[in-house]
Length: 304
Image (cartoon, rainbow, N blue to C red; front, side, top):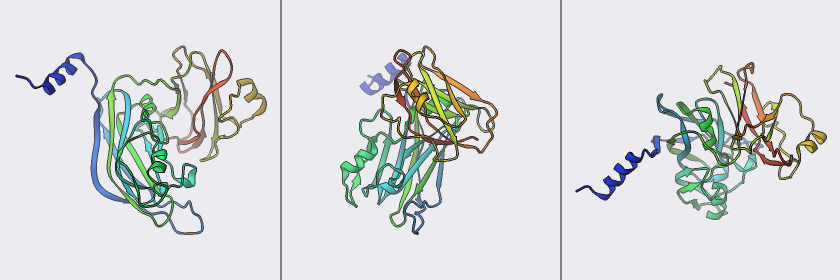
């Protein structure tokens, strides 16, 4: 007689439901180099880099989550950036000195990062304690930057995790790095804006909008150099397209156009030089009202 568990697995297989697949896992514990002592508080140490490879033939993914095994005696020190095989990237954790929060809670356990989680990891840090020595409980949290949207750029190849400690004294380590992919067609129910190079280094640089409203206008101001993206007065405002154009000027390049009936747009920029770092944001304007309904966080991206 088949067990209930085996019967369930057989039923799921018969229905053809995609099951998540995890790549990576426990690693030899590695110290994150401490921030550099000096007069500047936000003075990061050398990056610790770890990678996870998704083999060719996996196909596409409808969702992405990340699992990190982290130990650190000051949550607000740590920054973690995830870069996909095609150059798309997101910031999983941002330190206090970069505008997230300067929280002394500890990290100590396995943390699953998922866009659908109800609690932001920053919020969990504050909830755990605003005093040193209390660890954020292991569990599932929402990262500072979105993850699932990276699936639009492709998932096969090497994923790179970059860990940095931005402040001297408190230290930490990494002992687990994994990516979990759900096979299927990339999908999103909320607007996203990402950049990538779908064919890897040396290929056209691509701007992708997804999950937007049909026929909405998209707008991408871009500024050469890290940390220079316009990211100010129009955030949090119900600003209209015409008002934005009347009150703000941005240096080139500026990319604008119309989303498809499916709320999607992809623009390839074939002549962007390798090594160029751009600061970008993405804004969507409703086709019917002209009012902005989505603005991405400002971020930096480097062309491969």
